[in-house]
Image 1: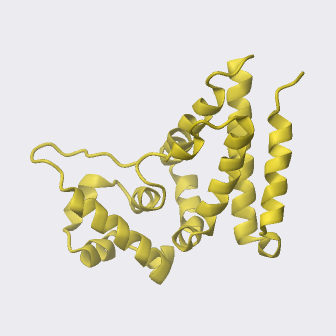
Image 2 (image 1 turned 135 degrees about the vertical axis):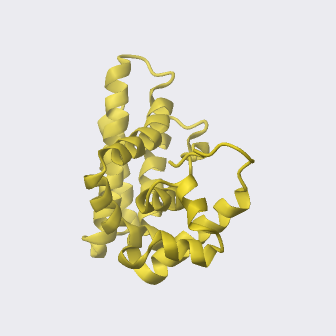
Length: 191
């Protein structure tokens, strides 16, 4: 999500690694509200200006720490439509089960409500590449396939978020398998 906005000497990747690890650790330890750029800089042993050059806000840094700079598309390699849906459901559940993600969600939801550009980039950067894999090589209307892919991503992520925060008693392998079955049937090629 963040980009290297600086010019001059090359960026030190070890700083990024330390900062991202400290961010994940501090989210779990202190929570969103107590997490600050100053705390992260201190714990990572870097200057606040190093953070500011890399990430424009706490929300952007946290998103980078929990999601990475780009989505991992390796699980989609060689899958059919059912495999694609299954991975979206499993990947969403795995993401929202992580302690640092659980700690970040309330604050990130508020931050994205207040920052339209951050929200827009998150959706485009992470749904776009996965949706493109769903659409590639499919017969029929590309716009419909793209809409189907984005709908599956939204429903799978929504189900994972809801079961990890509200419907915790129903957060089971069986429920998520059923979500995947329903979504596969919804986007199955029409005969």
